[in-house]
Length: 246
Image (cartoon, rainbow, N blue to C red; front, side):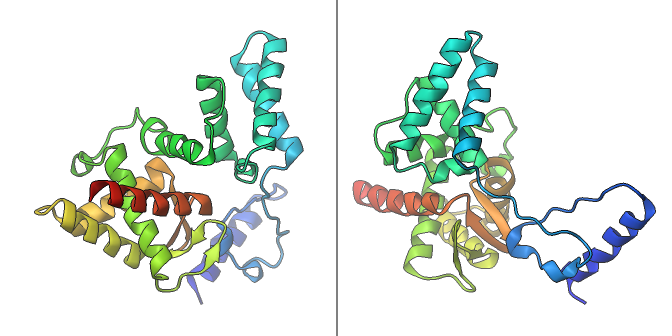
């Protein structure tokens, strides 16, 4: 019996112990098998469509702007900016949409060009989003620039050489965790000689997954970027940074 199938036993026990209450079970799509819980109704959570995006933006500004007319105007302006940009597809992801709304609220407009917007979004994820959380001592060197460098190195390598068990999906290439840790260790060995590479690489992967959210464990032991566009952005960032540093 697989690990996923084993998990079904306590779920059925729980459902039987709390009648007539409903039991909802959530899982990452890549790690789920519908036949595991055949008596449950199976649903997929979809990205936001136009109606959901516009409702989100209205609610966002209504909470933050006391003037209702100005709140609606700001929400409409942001929707128009999204509608006529290359990032409309990304806005269906609630987390990315939140970052876009935050950037728009602070700067009153979206940055010109997709690259600048990705730059702001990754800054939000890697630096500002979790700024109030404590950082592990072993990760003290990993400021925004160094996080971008290590992610750029991994993203570029994933584009050049398909990692073991890689598969292409919305998050880009699904990267085997062992392969990803080896990329982090290679970066650490080249840039920070003397550090305990295996330990720091594990701590870094955990921080990027749970604290920053730029990487997600799509299925057990396999990781992808929040959106495939971020993988492409970090790979391109690596190339530019390598040329400028040469």
